[in-house]
Amino acid sequence: MLVDFDTLPDESRVWIYQANRSFSEEELIELNKQLDTFIEAWTAHGKDLEAGYKIVYKRFIIIALNQDLNKATGCSIDASVHFIQELEKQYNVDLMDKMNVSFKQGEFVAYKPLLDFKKMAQQKAVSKNTIVFNNLVTNIAEFKENWEVPASESWHSRFIK
Image (cartoon, rainbow, N blue to C red; front, side, top):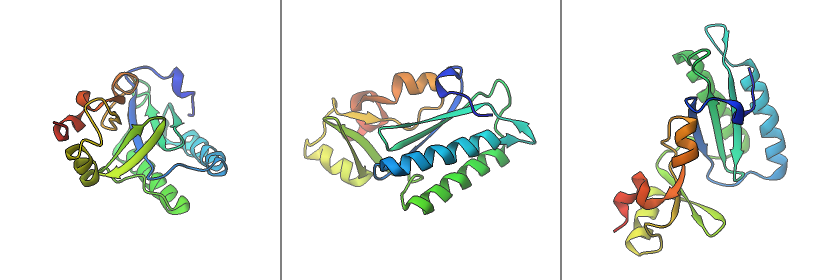
């Protein structure tokens, strides 16, 4: 069952999918409709899942699930992964590659392969103060507090001297 993302409890599990480009306004309209439809019908062993989503910076799809009501199962997680893979094909966008880094350059969100980010760190093009997106957060509380942080406060810090 689809609910407003902001009404879900802080313990709700999150999955973050970062796109390798921004979605256009037209794509966002269609993407919202598709996410509404998928989440409204998303179940685990026939039981409704209370979930919501948001699209941030026209680039990140964040899906959250209230596991207090019903927990995600292997099948329901597989269904969400297949849904995301279909979006990748439809929009010709990469959403599943975890070996890429998104970070802010001013108000712009940059997206680089991890190797390029490491080189940028070596060349001092990014610093410990660069705002990065920590897509490894696991729940809404962590999303609110630790998703958009200085590189020094994230796993990215290992590349910055």
